[in-house]
Length: 406
Image (tube, rainbow, N blue to C red; front, side):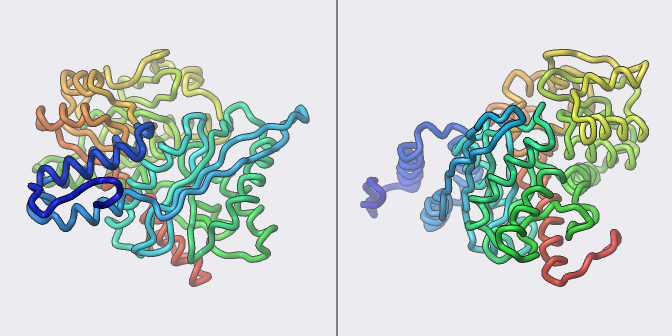
């Protein structure tokens, strides 16, 4: 008897697997994103569990976080009105090193989303071979349309609680959706005020206060390198490949830039309102304009059309309807469902490489498999970001800053 589930020595491997799976679902029945992530790994590892059931016991422990932290984040907006958001940090595993994983600020954030991200981070961090455990955190705060002062007020309040749970040898957060250099700077500044020390307790920092060269580019570049190596294994190259990209944030921007460097043709960016298409592909100058719109002006991607005479904007739609050779989902979880995956295959896409975390539903992944589409899952394809974060941690510990080549 274990965790309210009966096991017997005579149970078949299949029955044990079913019992463990049912127990996980029973414990967290409302956490759909977390259960989706667990189911995906379960499907992949079932042959391992059948061959050696001892790993089933390991997996059952692995899905339970070492610590789950939830807290109130009060702050005052520009109108003097008190606001309250929820903050989370799920410290999933410290088996390989200090907890490590990003912070996400988005209205969709809840405990289920943070748990799924922390669970995925466990596998991703282990693939880097660096000494990093796994965690994830964030808040349902939405920085969109908020002033710099409001974002700073929120970040300072968030860190006032979070600081007691993190440390250079304990837990090292980083950025994720809506948490970039600005937010990391506000968070790091508040930590220093409270703790009275300068240590590498965050990664993704500005170069002027302990950041690492290549960190901004790392996730997008890494995803493209993964695709490049996958194609090379198939005897193909990136040259001339037309690529649809979702999102227009950090990962999407640097995915497009590296595709361009390798001779591919990035043709789309998107946000939650729609997507923009450059039929002949984005140039370096055009990608840099997207960066300015999103990173400096912080406006919708539709504003790009005022810059380009050839651009087309499709409101309320996703780029998966565009014929292409490769797809790079780089926005958010579950952005490609069954119908989207079928559209990608129908439009000639031969490879899907995930820059976002779990952007494909399990049903979409089945479509990829049946169509023999090359598939780079997020746990491997977007691990470049956290890999360079690990190198930033090493530089902080040494009080050094390595060159771009290093």
